Image (cartoon, rainbow, N blue to C red; front, side, top):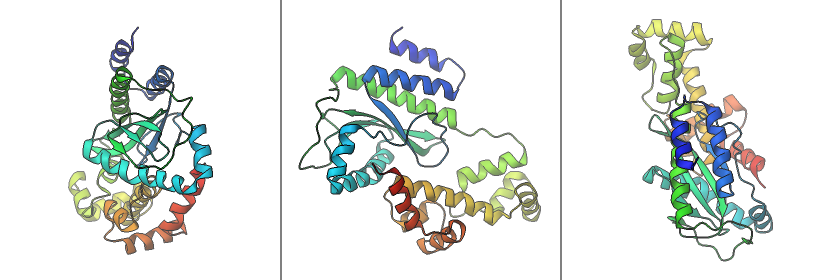
Length: 283
């Protein structure tokens, strides 16, 4: 069975994350690469996909050149992220270490929920390139020809689309599900509040407050802030946005308010959390 026939076979089956996991193995074998996923929202059940490749040649290079390591982090967390929000399609990037990777944004209900990276590959043409004065050893990396690139891009985009569809939340019509659905998709809006939620539930604002307290054991404001802090943690781990930018992207009125709520809940500042996450994933 050729690979596109295999794709049609998969997409005709019931959505299942196990199918996604099996297909990632097919892509990795076909292109002699590794897939990894950065989850920006916590919405993605990505099975066995790691957070980073940790390709041997790249890790050794970065260990000996810490400046390039920092540049690569900023490149992935800012430039790549911004390019995805503009293109909304797959593309190739060439990093500071002169490693080529394919980038596939994952969308859930129109929200950029994460990104799948495929690589590493030998240098080649890329839509997003960052300058570098030197490069690590690429003797063992696969060189992609035009046919390879075309097939990888098609398969990767379909893989990202499949993951987004698999992980798009589908709640029931009960109140708990409707409240969770509202928080997951509206918490990052600055006008999210009990009034909007009460209209969705068909209740008065006081009755909605009572329902939230009864179901979740906390008031609506605490529940809303918990979801916003969860989103902020994802941005701190996976992007290079400033604290002020993250505050505005997660529904807080400003960075000062985010800082105060974050420290009260997690016993550390957003900056400290970001630093600890970088230490966790450093090669």
